[in-house]
Image (cartoon, rainbow, N blue to C red):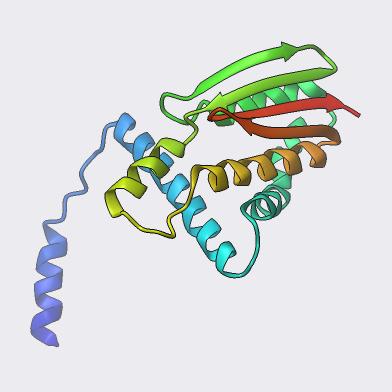
Length: 168
């Protein structure tokens, strides 16, 4: 035990923590975020909980993080929401309608490309589907929108996640 502790101390004395470029840190963080969602959905699936319901639970649990934009109007919320989407590398976000009372957007490449990649790489039958992944986000966006006292609708068409947010 004494020799092992001396070996560990010697290793720690020469430990150098490498600096990663910000782009690599960002990529690793997003992959970790997507993988966390993947694991949560798979676990929820084993308990009979849909990915949509899990997304709603996730959104409700994180409701307090949206407090800075509560009661500040739809535009403030949309700014925060689109800022979240822009975290994803190579995201696609299209604003279909924008007014002070209603916003309609569609988005893709918000992490689902990792799901495609991992499913091909690992060839698992029970792998997470992109539909489940998008259902998670549908639930998440709807619950956060409701938390901020707006009304939301969401659906998936032709590989795009659509979100419509309206003042009540």
